[in-house]
Length: 320
Image (cartoon, rainbow, N blue to C red; front, side, top):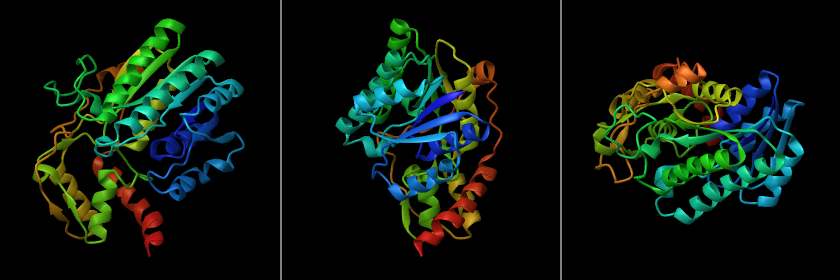
């Protein structure tokens, strides 16, 4: 297959591109290497990809309509994995214009480029945050949306709706995969596994909302990538589905796991959770199991052990 991966220099995007290349696909990666976090780390993420003769890197911004159209027209792609976006619920709270610009206009540019190029299928990276503070536990795809708690999930709901529009009008197959608390090697510095680990290592204080009495459905990046690849291989017309582990972990227990791995105690403030934070995320993965054969198997202990090994090898040496 010929696949365009947007956000290919990012955490999940670089893992996805690498897995596709390893199995023999031709991959084009699009990324603008912005400074939301270290561009050097993003360069490191794509370094291994550059060794593959079947990989092409495009440095472009999703908001550049003409550039996106040119890339899609030239690539003759079988499918697009649209992972490029401004992420992070908390960071989005006072930055709605930026998130709207990148995540909504950027997604329209990709869909328009696909329409003009005749690209038949897209897998769109959505988020568990679209469910907000739902009373439906576990989270199931039939739950009506419409009460996002921050700009980031609001833009992802918009992306899912735009996907239906392009499916309805132009026949593009659109699968939205809702990621649940993805973690693992190459994890971003703004994500909780990295922040907790880094804070414990350097004896810094971090915030643990509600004294850790919150639950998150931590899902290992390798399991997520397998789900995305299955979605790329399986055009379904228009679908939305959860990609999680289906086993929420209490945040206080998650911190205790990191403490054991690092061998040090955490320093924490424990304020009440802000309005942007749901108390629980919990994926019902029945649909993904049924339609994609999705079968996450990496436990949070195993996955965080792999993350800790990566952190020691790649992050600690650069911090000295």
